[in-house]
Amino acid sequence: MKIIKSIYLVALSAASLGVVSCGASGDDQGLEYAPQMYHSVAYEPLTQIQNEEAGSWLSNREDGKGEFFNSNVHNPHNMNMREPVANTVARNQYDMLPYRLKVADLEGANAVENPVELTDQVLADGKRLFTQYCSPCHGDGGQGDGKVGEVIGGVANLTGGAYINLTEGHIFHVITHGKGRMGAHGSQISPERRWKIVHYVKQEIQKQ
Image 1 (spheres, rainbow, N blue to C red):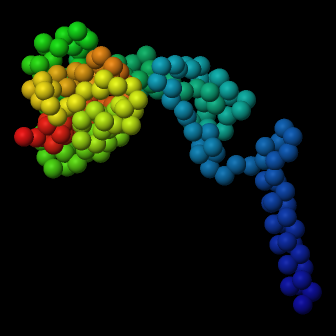
Image 2 (image 1 turned 30 degrees about the horizontal axis):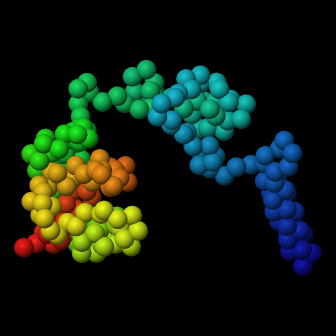
Image 3 (image 1 turned 180 degrees about the vertical axis):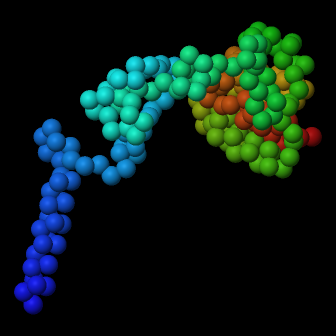
């Protein structure tokens, strides 16, 4: 019985010592489990610290480098962000180029075709986006009778007159840059979403 009690006391003392040794206080930060998780390397895209000793006084990194060293040794010049190939232009999932037409170039906009394929899902997305961004002014039916439209006045009725014959490119251009009382929405709505709204306007709001 005395032997079991002694073993128990030794085990309890060891456990207490282990807990105390892992504790942190003052300048003593204690022991860290899996320090690479606490001190993961944060790669900054445009700035690099190439001095491998920077922050060595703080570091627990497994590669032995300083805590603040964050250059990518696998890329040219130890850069973290790879530069795109010269003269390349980013395209999205619809293979769309960035929209470059200026505000006044409505004639050029008339020739732009909708790159987003018309599907039931696209129309559903277009309806949701129209309700979110357009109906406050244009109304749910596009007749210019939204709550905001009633206050400011002069909101286009998309269901009648010359608006029926507007091209998809024209509508996209106006959503992007604005026209008259309508402000530009290019910064709030992505190009793909703008084109979905265009589909909804032409297929549902202006359906014959």
